[in-house]
Amino acid sequence: MISAIGNNVQEAYANLSNAKSGIGKIHHLNTRYKDEFVAGEIKLSNNDLMDYIRFKSPALNRTSMLGIAAASEALKHSGIDLNDGMRTGLISSTTVAGMCKTELFYKEMVDKSLHLEVLDAHDCGESTEEIADYLGVKDFVTTISTACSSAANAVMLGSRMIKQGMLDRVIVGGVDALSKFTFNGFNTLMILDKEWCKPFDENRRGLNLGEAGAFIVIESEASLKRRNGKALATVAGYANANDAYHQTASSPDGFGATMAIQQALKMSGLSPAQIDYINMHGTGTPNNDQSESKATVNIFGNNVPKFSSTKAYTGHTLAPAAGVEAVISILSILNDKIFPNLNFTTPIAEFGLSPVTQVTSHRMNHVLSNSFGFGGNCSSLIFSRV
Image (cartoon, helix red, strand yellow):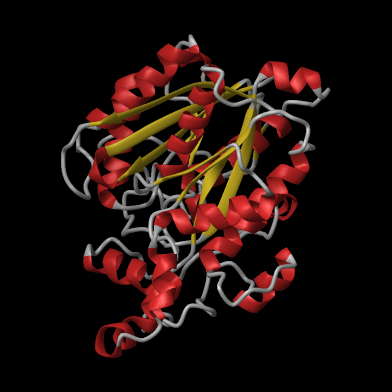
């Protein structure tokens, strides 16, 4: 994982454990809003990123470089040899693709038909292909774009392909870089907070945008045993549901989220009482936190597990959000630790639910991770201790 809280998982874990947010002033994105909003911007410039991944190419955009940084870290940590004859896939996700680059040349493209070669970066599949080429993955490569649930659906597709015997292991996750388009779009929707976001707080005002690349490696038990590998956790359950309520808003009754959680629990064979912690989608917008709170109460009633949103650390990274939070969920399991919901003071009056606000030691056997996107795309994942 590469995000505002670190260039790798080790740095991210240190900042999570010290309740240190990565959200702050914008330095690298040249937007008119850079002095108006805070964001979860990665601290490396594009030139720094090229040095970091040890690959210099003017053709690479920031999205591709972030994806390469995160996916190569995941692959290296897994210990997998791509030349061992096992079938390896890559499923990456993105929402704005390389728009961080194409938008820089928009006026010249329209007025003078110049720089048309950069339009390739506008395709969501471009960054995936560049990540696959860098890693050397050839057996299966595809891209998912389902708004902010994208990386969760990458985890689901990868898990299903392994379950059906189509792949032995798969690198899954997502990547998005900050762009002017993103800021303009979310500002138009009036759901950006100019200060630090406050997920699940009665006085929340909106989200902070972020950027990230985040991937995990999923492997079949047979493949893992064959190479004497070590599993960190298991993908115990997953589900996607859509309530088709609105293009950008979640159902106030939490219908889609409720269905996703119910189906993920059913698949896992777990009861709601067995969930030790929920990593909430928790964007800090009035609509999302209302809807997700309602869904949580729908499922858990008066016995809501310990929960927190970690988006006040990284910002809302859009497509890779579920990848970021998959990494965080697995870190929670490995370390029996809950990372707190920053900036929270007052529960939402309707529900009276209070997230964990301090770094907390807690036995972790089963973690539910939610990711909900525009268009009603609701996905839930359950990670369990090995």
